[in-house]
Image (cartoon, rainbow, N blue to C red; front, side, top):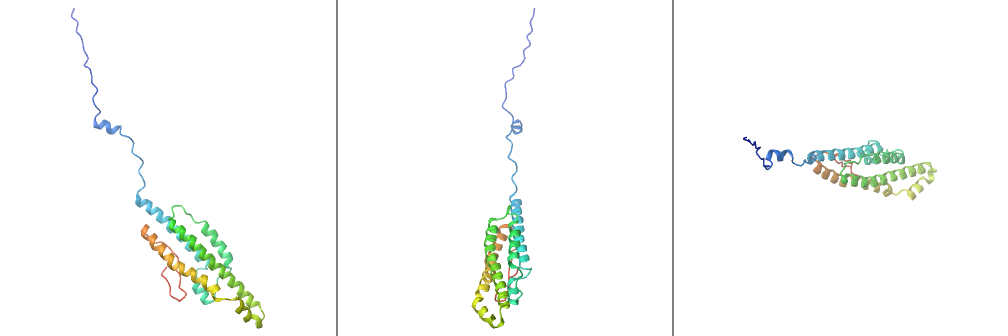
Length: 196
């Protein structure tokens, strides 16, 4: 009997081919947001925040430049109420993705604005008291209580802050985000005005 042996060839494992290696490659991390998209998002959030601060301030001021109002004698009606409304509106501004420089500026701005509004309220009350005094005592009362610096100093401080620090912050943020940043600009006490 002839026995035919059928032999099966022995397969030796071969190293993986590059194509197979590519199929088994470790997963890639998810794509990160592009720097330009991140910059645009932060710039948009910062501009919206500053616009909200500007809008709330102009609303509290009655839409007018406080320097022009005070020089013209019109004043701001109910500064304490307007300040309270302003505080609420500013506190409600969305700070997500806002540049820390804009938030820092708002804190400084808020202190200067509060000082201005408190001085305006004090001036309004004093004007009422003087107007209510008997005519012979009106000048004495005015001379004894009304210091021009009591009203002018907070206004000058606020205007100078807005027109110096405000414009510095505006320039820095515009440089960072390559877009227009809305920052309040006011007339100076000397009558000149800044471009908004």
